[in-house]
Image (cartoon, rainbow, N blue to C red):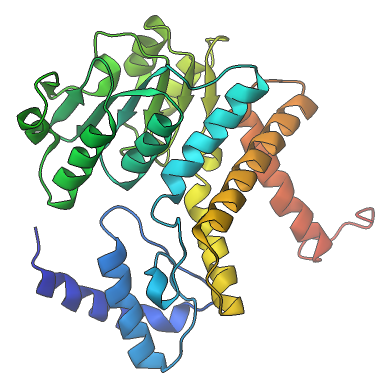
Length: 321
């Protein structure tokens, strides 16, 4: 609800205080909810004014001045790449599957774009006021309309003015819809799925929940999900890693003073998400809990950090080598 000038002044003031503590070899912030290309641009401009240096100190920049192709799409695309890879390894596919998405922001939009490209039926988007539902799925034109509404800061409820088949449910989330849901993609915010929501999804025959948001499922919800052996759960620490992955690729391009093609970045993102899934799956097997990808993600992440700490001597043990 702030004016462009207010956002501009805040970003400049914020970076004035932050810049001594960040750097390309120190900490590299990225955007998130409420911090998009505009805010990154204002902050990066102030960083350059203060330092007189062109460093890859923020990610999410515009491609014309140090950004990377696929960065805006990365989290949403990565979410679907890891889902698609898991299904293909199990002999399945996304084609024709009914997919419920929460949220209508960056992650939700680009997850939907990739799902539609792969033949899935995206049946919902949501915001804090309620859920918009298309029984036969949003088509490309419908998705473009959702994107246009959100870019102009309008609500999902306004979509009914575009589509005669859409239904809007005030105060509802996608998990409460009275419809079949094959896969759930929470892409809105933390703790949006509670235990009751998780049970609702199981009752609807949901076969997978893949987190696009950070920690969208409560601890109680995760416990419920793990009681259902027919449902695959991939936590956000693995499923939504695409944004961080392409941030790293953006930093690599900045270091080399290069801009890679959209196709190259997209291919590398897909490969990274597939490696993440394999590492989670392998770690779960090593711990005799095959299929528990939450355990696998925790173990794989812990091992990577622990190995680095031992190898760099941050923690010493005489039997390390």
